[in-house]
Image 1 (cartoon, rainbow, N blue to C red):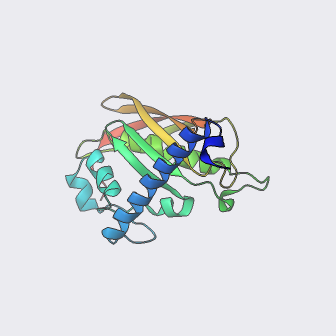
Image 2: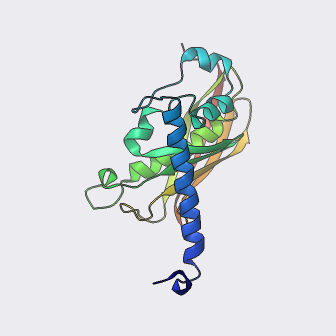
Length: 194
């Protein structure tokens, strides 16, 4: 079948998926360029004391800081970040299946929790930290290995106060189809980890 015979609606989907895959490939190239460990790592406490949350996350995307180990375990990556927003891209795989033959709800929750948490993290000033107080998840439809090939969790801060932040996130496919949505409430406090 040539391109002229393809239905009109597949072009935007394939363009979006191609863009998503290119974003992922560029991230992996930056990680290799900076020789990040293949199993991930954590930000050193000394760096955490000197950088805002947004600066920490931007360093990760630039390949200058390692992705956390959970990214390799669960196959999802921080792709974009701005103040109050974070986008993760995930790849549903067979190793994420539950006994019923679909991607486990814990995978949905972990990807969404990461987008929510990093959206809040992007608002942290030097010396501020946060922890999750509440996570609420709504599964809308199931995921199978490779269907869709990738999903994105898009997190946005709804409120950021001195002691509390709230955020919401959607898990969508490249066609815009909603798979799940979630919200969080986080406690904000001063102090850098030891």
